[in-house]
Structure formats: C-alpha cells, structure tokens
Image (cartoon, rainbow, N blue to C red; front, side, top):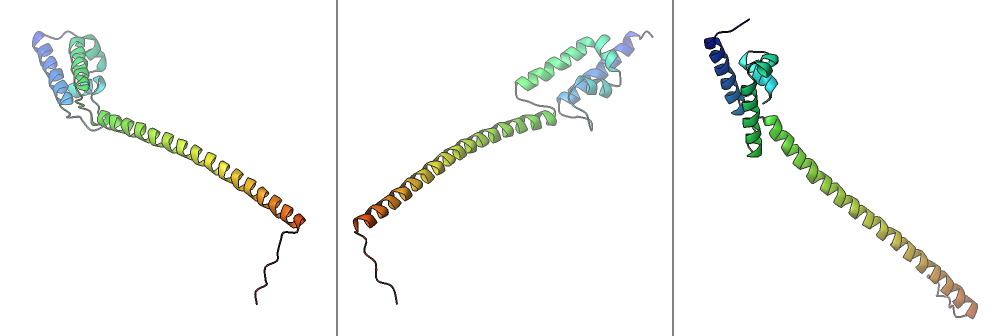
Length: 143
C-alpha cells in the first residue's frame, strides 16, 4: 500500500516525537530506550522502521549513543546496570582483599602452631635432660 507525502510526513513526525520522548527519559511502562520501543511508541512495526524509515532509526541510535558517551542515560535501567556493575567491581575488590587477608592469616596460624610445637618439644627435651641430671627439685605441696 502506497502512502502519500502527507502521511509520510505525519509518520516521520510521530517517529521523531517518540524518539524525543524516549531520549528525554519518558519511557512507557516495560519499555526501554531502544528501537523496539521506538517503533511501538510511534505506532508502526519494526520492519517499517528498518525499511522505510531507516534514516530516522539511525538518527535515533546515533543520538542515543551520543547521550551514552556524554554520560546521560535516558533509560533508568541502563543507569541501574552501570551502578550495579560499579558495585560488583567494588565487591570483587573487597573479596580479593579478604581472600589475601585470609591467606595471610592462615599462613600466620600455621607458623604460630609450628613454633608452639617446636617450643613444646624443646620444653619436653629440657625437662627430660634436667630430670636425668638430677637437677629437678620438687615444690612443696599445698595444704
């Protein structure tokens, strides 16, 4: 079905208005700042947007990318994803720090147990040596 020039202009105006709304952060419930939502919000199929109005779709994607590069996110989900990714990176750093600390503490514990065992063995050896030399005196018993 052929459309006349006035219908084409009217459809292009709807697409531009929908693109401006989406890029301005006015997203429909359940929608995103993407081509699918653009087509739905403009009241036409994605196929029509890709074939007949490709220049407007490309302009929308270019403007959306410019906003992202400038740090302006019109889609709150994108902002949430960025925030969660930063939070994940921070948590990964904390986990890595804790893992290093845990490894250090385990090594310290092993060294401490090893030293205690060596000291215990030395005490037993010294007691045995003192007992053999007759240098051990008994302490008085308590009453």
